Length: 137
Image (cartoon, rainbow, N blue to C red; front, top):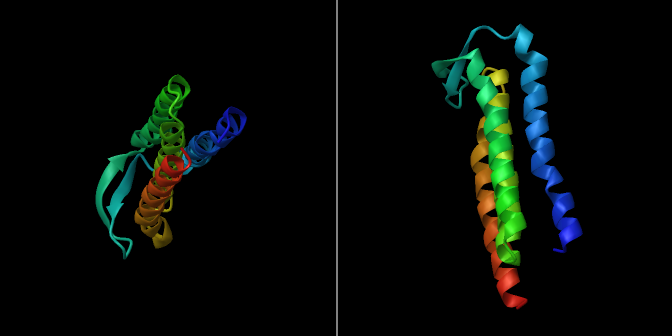
């Protein structure tokens, strides 16, 4: 992955963070002050959270993205750069999925099922990327 394509690929987590912020902002006015949270696979809420807690999701996504991008820019290790990008993209997608579970109030179980799938795919992609980078040396 060359420097130019590396920078372009950082758009994936950046766009995901923006999507999280847009989703929260778009629905903010229609949300109750207390939202159901921690849904089971049948869509039953196991707890509640304040509406303002949703502001944490895009903020956390942005902080994770900036830290990973900063580390990536400071290292010359190609495997680390690529792995950080893959991990950051996966984390941002998991955060987006979590926000969607909350915003749909558990009515769409596919978002809950997406989280472990995204995690597994992210870890497998990192392992494959690191193996390929080590073999190309």
